[in-house]
Length: 161
Length: 395
Image 1 (cartoon, rainbow over the protein chains, first blue to last red):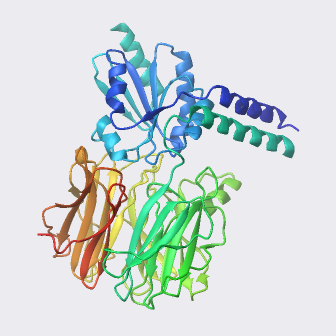
Image 2 (image 1 turned 45 degrees about the vertical axis):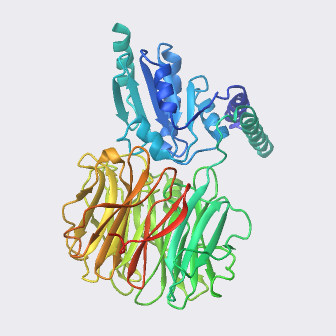
Image 3 (image 1 turned 90 degrees about the horizontal axis):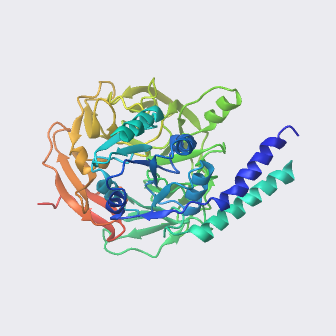
């Protein structure tokens, strides 16, 4: 019986999934240049994650919290699994991390080499990966689980400019 | 309690289904395996096992891959195949022409796997109903079978999570998985499972070569102290005694994740070891090759293959007589290419890298296979299908 509150929370979380499903966009060949053009001149945080990346799934809710704390952050989430995943499961994870309202993309092309090359020719595919893009288009890459204090500091710097 | 949980599960299902129905914009359905793995039989037949969506099939060719037989199903009913980027169904042929296929399925959404094997003793006309390779049901993935060339006995190694479950039950941490192995016991199945080593990286393919009768050498991504995921080789002293871990290279890749990018190994008749691998360590990044004179000496300095800007990946080594072949995949901005090098002096010097195949869409990892003294590239691509390309004929 003592598990009841947990179950209730689970039920609520589960029930809210459908309502908050992310508006997932298909990331294929040419998507990166479109994405960059859409955010041109605006400081933007692009976070690459994957359903098949365990540390990503642990980190995701932290991004959800950061987004809630920092409405000034333009956040783009890209699910970059090397083998394209079921969009329903991608949406499900985004909703659970409170990231359904972020700009969400998912790799849908199995030609992973090509997608990665368009983003960064030297990216070997490791996840998670975060790209901080300033208003001049300068990219700063954080590999692995991001230090969100570093992201906050970067956001502050962007405001001052 | 039980009914509440069931209700929660029902809601989860309904929620997922609704989300899929309303927001299934991306065209991709569920992830699917896309691999083709070759093996030559003693009579020169090329056997190919294909993992396709929810089934495993075997085809064979008696004209070096120009034409193939009708596919024979290994899986009698649809199965939830392991589609991980470094997973593959595998096939080996024993000296009597018996064909053994291994593959894994996902048991759940947490990527816990179950490794199966199936045998055909009627020249591939039918396959036995797939059976688990081990009795423990916790999780097995990256199963790899190899025939001991001296004894004809089939060896299997895989990454096993039984000790993870045990540690967790005891409240102890257990990073990674264990390197497990078993030998085929007659034709009835695999004998008892043993653990060769705990705490290896959990989702990279293994490489197997033989150092002598009953002496498989397994290369794998290990977890060294500090969560450093560099490569190690374990050479068996005999069928039941795995030796110590010999580190291939100190790349210092500290990562709390698994890169889905495993190594390859070959052993030449002179006893020399050859390993190729991918790393993103602080000491070096990219694709590398190193050799060791024998099973005891340290590996020499790593040699970089290509440059990181060309995304070099998925290396594969093959000893063919005294020739040592090495292939890997690169991306040139438009096409994936397979690059090839050969060494005829035990890996000390190499031919210039040469492109032997390319494709402008998704592809499986390049593999190497030999028959009657000739080496071939075996490569499955989405745009061009399956190809068996002789390497020795390259100008």
